[in-house]
Each structure stands twice: as structure tokens, then as C-alpha cells.
Length: 176
Image (cartoon, rainbow, N blue to C red; front, side, top):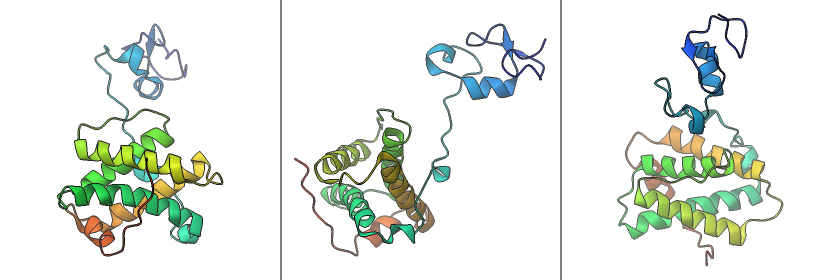
């Protein structure tokens, strides 16, 4: 029997979403959590955040883009200071991934890490109060992508990127 989705490969998996059965590739590409979660083949999607759209470092030279980047970095740095610099770069990356989840994937992200949630909520409040209308959601995602790229490149798994950012004055933006 051929796959009901692609009609080219042999269907080896029974499927509630695309009955009666699909090939493994189509199974992975068409999964929907609400329908497929009880299936033995179900796995949550793996997000490749490093492959999402991002401005290059040259494109980030724009003053308005740097202002948005400063807003996002201030949220994480203030949270880090409030905890006596106990945060790790992995938490900063998780914070940026939450922003991707919200602004690229249009999901309501929640982290099991209280500090990451705190920074995320702070960033959202700062953005709502201060972001210029010239920045589209696509532009915001690309700024998040640029910050993610730089943080991934600089970290060695501890606090290297956060310590680097703390070398510069933190801009404070209204968030209430």
C-alpha cells in the first residue's frame, strides 16, 4: 500500500491524521500534536533555531535595530543582575528561543526555568512599551536571530556571553 500523503513510498505506519497509513517521512512532516500525541511515533517537533531568519552583523548596524537588540539584552541582563549574576548562557539562549517561539512560531511559550520566564515577560513588556512601529514581526525575528547567532558563537557553555554583555552599560527601558 502506498502512502496516503505522497503516494510514492510504501506506507508502513497507521495514521489517525491521514488514514489509513503513511510513510515515515510524511508521518514526520504532517504531525499535529492534538491528533498525533497518543501515537507511538509521536515526538514533539525539533526546532532548529540557528536556521531561522537573522540579520547579519552588518545589517545590525542600523540604529533602530540596535535599539531593539538593546531592549532584549537589557531584559536578560537585568534578570541576571537581580540573581547576583547566577544565570548561564544556556538560559539566555532559552530566553531567545522563547522569543522565537512567540514571534516566529506564534506560540505562547512557557519555560520550566523561572529566570528565563522572568526575562521573557520583561522583554515583552519592554517591547510593547518601546518598540518603534517601523519594526515588523519579521524584522523583530531577524533581530532575535542575530542575537542568537552571536550568543551561540561566543558561549563555551558557561557565562562567557553574559559576562561580555555586562562589560557595557545596561540601557534601562520602561516596562510598566
